[in-house]
Length: 407
Image 1 (cartoon, rainbow, N blue to C red):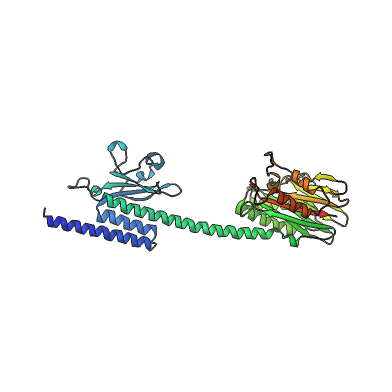
Image 2: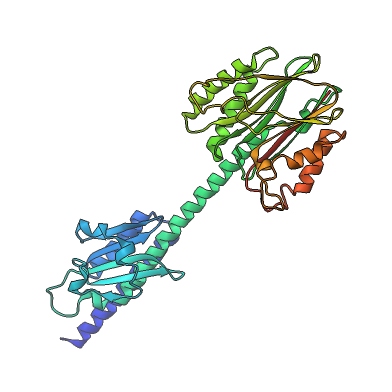
């Protein structure tokens, strides 16, 4: 063979490879879609280099066949985890390895972690001379790695954008949820009732909620609730619940009837997937009567500063949304004789661990409420002592508290 012709052919192929590499690099920099990058990749390997069969397995969330040109469809079903993860270098395939039509397996790494496997088969199996696979192997490995890493970077960029959008949505949802929680400056504060609250979601979006509603000149309603589960779905359900409660609760509605109505709404909206535990109370400072329903919620603590008696307002109903129809609801009434204080809370508080490693329950509430100081001061001192939210290592849930001085 004419040496000059061989030399010219080599120069021509070298130039072709450089141009292809440049084209791929420019295409990546131009942010071309993955489909177009793979079309260029296939054209380089099959048309320019004479490679007949190429298949790429790539890891994203799971291993998947990213590209197949020339191999049987069944090859796309290979279990990568069990059959390929032991390949850590370029491997020439023998017949006993049972990879149909595959001549070479090329693993591709990123930060020492498998991100892809390249199968190569030669279209000129019966042809003369050196196989195109062997002739261009280093180049095939280089351009394949460039393409695969570029596609992975595209995926990671899209995932980053998706996470950023999700983060903004969560921030918006958190701000909207925060708006459902009444600010202490808007709580009733008069000689008959003074209400204060504390709210700390463990994550950006929590499942806790409390509220206080002035119902008439003498009646005030307040509640605390906890949705099963967390996240946006819990926040949406709680938002709907808040709107329903504020629309239905009046100075005169029977609390048992109110619970049944709220249950029907939650059942319709949650479709049995979530439920709400709820403590709901209405205080009439004219008659000095506190009426309440506890729907499977933590028992609020009521302390009378004159008699020094502590009462726990126990559950008298199943949670809202647990059953299509609540079998029974029992409203309770307590006369308020003298200055009393009530603290309602979610299990993020009661399930905090003490020094003995056990749940604190209501022990700290009882300790801090048992005096004649205003309940707002009691609450501030207790939160500071418990290190919420900054220094308590056992804080694994939302913490919500609504408390009131009753006279």
